Amino acid sequence: MAQLFSEKSFSQSPDIAVLQERIARLEAQLSQEQKEAAPEQRVEAAKQEISNYVQEVQQTPSFAPAKSTRDDTSDLKNKSRAEQLGALVELALSDGLDKAIGVANGLNNPAILDELHDTLVDSYFNQLVQMGVIKLL
Image 1 (cartoon, helix red, strand yellow):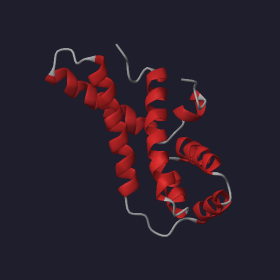
Image 2 (tube, one colour):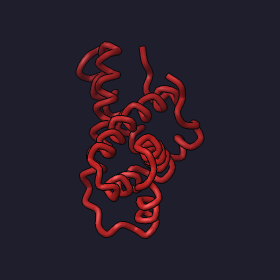
Image 3 (cartoon, helix red, strand yellow):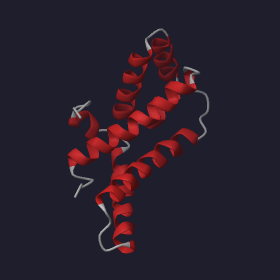
C-alpha cells in the first residue's frame, strides 16, 4: 500500500507517543502470554489497540467547539465525502484526534465519523510499521 502521509507530518502527530506506548505495553503482554505470538495475532492485536484508542478519543465528551473547529467544519460541509475524509485524516495527524473528531462531529454525518475511524486505524498501523514501532515477523 502506498504511503498516504509524509512521515514528517505523522511523526509530529500528538497521538503518536500515546500509540507507541500502548503498542509497547501490548507487545509486552503478548510476550508474557505466549513465547512467540503468531504474526497475524500481533497485527490484529495492534490494529485492535489502535481502534480502541480512536474510540476512546471519540467517546471523550467535548464541550463547545473552539472557533477554529467551527471554521474547519463549515469549510468542509460543501466538500465531497472523499475530500472531507482526506482533510479529517490530515487534521488528525497534524493536530490530533480530538480536533479531527470534533470537526467530524460538527458535520453531523455518522458515516464520515465511522469512515474516519477505519481509515485512521489502517493509516496509523501502516505508519507505525514503517517507523518500526510495530515489527511484522
